[in-house]
Structure formats: structure tokens, C-alpha cells
Image (cartoon, rainbow, N blue to C red; front, side, top):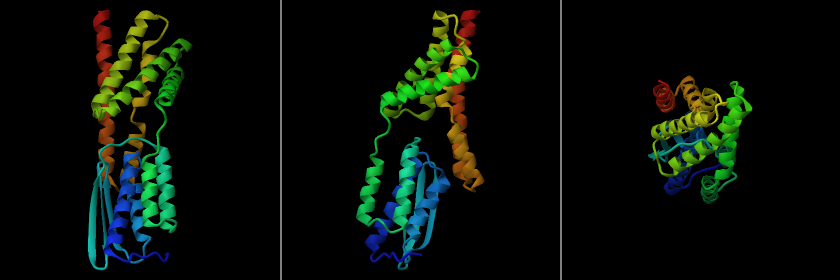
Length: 262
């Protein structure tokens, strides 16, 4: 136990705001629910005259409550959107450890959280290139040829750019995933008409891999194992709907192929 103390009710409110904002950023950037809850509790309990700290988080919001000098302070923060940014999660983990160790004042902590929140992600060009590399590699991994590699690379580039547009316009995850899967599968279908050497199913499988909710399923199951049943079920259900959107988008194209082929 360190010797950090809170002197006024105003400072207690600053502390609870800093802690819940940290938890909000963790969830928003793809951290596990148990990690967000544990982080905010540790930040509050690092002050020796703060008592009865309770945190409850789900994928769309986080509650935090603490007691200071007989007064209970409770706050709620909505998590409006989620993405995956492991760099920010690492920064937030480092920040919370430093905060608990007493290396930040309240003012300094606010500035550090602001800095982390404003960290720039990778450029669109970088995302486009590496998404293409991901899709093309998977097409070869599943038995595709070098021509499939090239086509999948181009489709991955298009998918990354399309998803960026959908994200900036605030399109729902289901519609964005459905349209993305539909787009790349249609482009794979037309590519097959122009380049007979490619294997369409290998190209489609590779091209939809960035849409597959692997991390979402993993986090959901891990939350369930950790006892966060509600958030875990929400994560798994979202993953199932994402998978359904992918299947629906690809299914439309496959039915079009059967119709034309018939």
C-alpha cells in the first residue's frame, strides 16, 4: 500500500473520472472486459482513503463507484464504438501502472490520457497495403496459386479502403461487414470471368479473412471464463452476427454465380 491520499471531494471526483475514462478507452480499443474493470479498480484503490471500489463493465458501457469520507460517488461512461488498437491498450496499461505507483499528478494524468487518446493510428496507405498482404497470404495458405495471390492482394486493398469509408461514416458493424463481404466476393466473381486461371473460392476465402471476428470470439470466451458472463455473451453474439453478415454477403455472390451458370 502506498501513501497516496485524496484530500477533498473534488479530488475524489477527479480520480473517479480519470479511472473510468481509462476503462472507457481500454474497452473502446478492444481490451478484455476484465482488464478494464481490474484497471479502474486498481487506480482507485491506489489511494489509501478510498474505499468500497466497485466496477462493472460491458461492451457498451462501464460503471464505477467508490466511497470517500462516507460519501458514495458513482459514474457511468458509454462506450459508443469499439475497434482494435493494441498499441493504445499497451500505452494505457503502462499509464495505469505508472499512475498506481504515484508517478502522475491528477493534472499530468489527464494530459497523458489525452495524449494516448489522440495517438494516430496507422496511415490508410499502410492499412491498405498490409490488409492486401494478409488476404493474399491466406489465399495461398488455403491452396491458391500466385495468380490468386495477386488478385486477393488487390481485393484486400479495396476492402481496407472500403472499410475505412464505412468506419468514417459510422455505418453499423453488420451492414459494413455484409457490404464488405459482398463487394470482395463480387469482385472475385468478375475477376474469374476475366482471368480463368484463378480459383474463385480461394480468392474469396483469402479476401474475407480481415472481416472474420476471431479476436471478438476469443475475448468473448475469455470474458465468460473470467466470470463476466454478460459481456462475454454480448461479444460472442456480436461475433455470430458478424459471421452471419459475411456468409450473407458471400452467399449472394455464390447464388448469382449459380444463376448465371444455370
